[in-house]
Length: 169
Image (cartoon, rainbow, N blue to C red; front, side, top):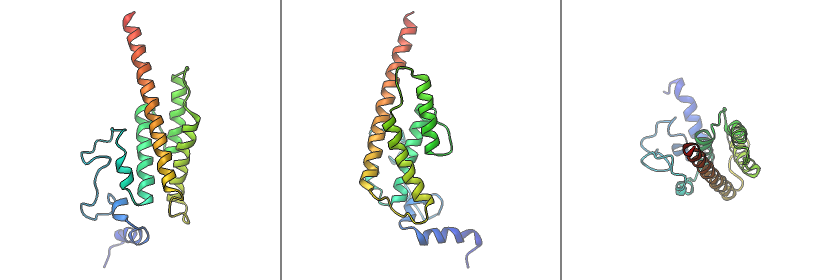
């Protein structure tokens, strides 16, 4: 006989495939969970995206990629908010207010919002159960990821030049 506390997890397990890898932090299912992108828990290696291709479950893919974008927006663009859409907005606003000579790329904003919308649809729309174009979703993430990386490099170079100029004075 199950206690009331276990009814919801059993229902979730019954309705979602591969739940043990998607929500293993919520539902105890042994040692099936591993950290990503690497076993050592190193979440800062932007270049290593091989782990993305190992994810088979669309829910897990959408959540993990959203978490990656959220992390970089928070860490490098001081983004705040409750979800990816809000973090995109604050990251863009913060970047544009601190970098008068550069603008946060609008196509990057559109791409990240597309990913956030698909993720939200998967999570909240009862009739939506799979990413329509999984390869396109991954490509949009990779493109956004690459562009964020390039923007971070430009910001760091600009900050280093500004620091060097102020030290020379």
